[in-house]
Length: 499
Image (cartoon, rainbow, N blue to C red; front, side, top):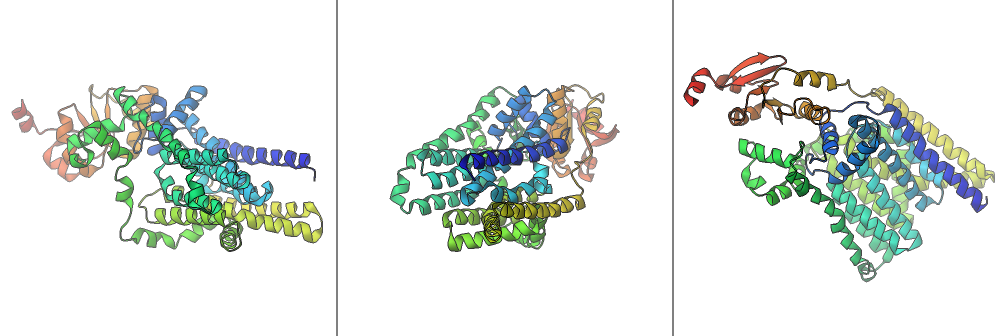
């Protein structure tokens, strides 16, 4: 095959690898806003605000650019942005695998099917930070593997910058940093030679400069501001002032480097033990049995026979990400597991290349290997599609915007306070910020057990309404129905005394 035909074939293959998943993700993207983090991230991007920890400034900027350029509503735009980033990440992972195998078909075959796996599909069809995390992770691997092939310092510098941006965007990138360092040291075979690239580490503070967004936007008092929420919750007594601090600098460190991940790690390892039994089934239904087995084989053979630096990097990244999030108390476990799946799929590509080369050699026809790999990918993809259908297919939950618009359209007094769980609070804030409905109302994301601290403080600021009221609240305050909510007021005798 001439070089020109090979380049043309790879160009067409790359285009299809990007376009097919992209069309699928666009066609199945959620048309409205998803609750919880997704609604808050969309509203923060729309207003250039500050979302929950760590604030995700890079994602906020990219989201704001997408909203400005798109004719669609912000929620749908942000969902489509995840699809674009997710499909692009798959392409970059395949190009990184090609650096190992030398053949794009065998590199893409184990990776393309992930687009149709439920975990990857979900995070790539709603407004979430994970698709950008995958994109930056894939870019880092691509530049590292290309640097190993070319030896060009520019490739290593690009890898450092992509890794730094990845760390600035999502803290879990720190799990992969030892693997990156090990890869560089194994390739250079000398710490002294690696030290020549130390000036490239200056790219790290440049990447972390995205966090200047927080103090700049906080001064502008945007409608979505997690720092203002920290201040309010501290004054309520829900957060400990000794932990959050008094000055903005203290709260910046609390937010960006806060104890969220530490609090969610299970020191007893009960969480990991409870999930470990279900992990093989999760991997198999997301990757397909063939690719899952090929990935494990690829890691073992790569460590034993090479290319060892790439195999050790992938093995470390797979194990570090999987073990950490196995023991991480979160409902989003499968979302966090997607990078592990992609590492395993990337490790499967040398096995696919060996199968392709073997088939071509035995039949003495180059096309035979490609046909075999294509057939294996189709069979593996059928298993992924079947597993996805068994888990509900590619449909999101019912729309929630109409219900929350109706909730905000009730005749609340000016300056009212609404206490409601996090998932609904973020959608209400989205309706306020993007659609301009009742921006004078304060929405507080809160559990019922936090009411006793919050209600006395909030009654000083305005009328208080809540989705529900526990026994403790009913004993201390007058609670009366108000549409689907309850109005909470001081008891008549206490109100008389306060006046």
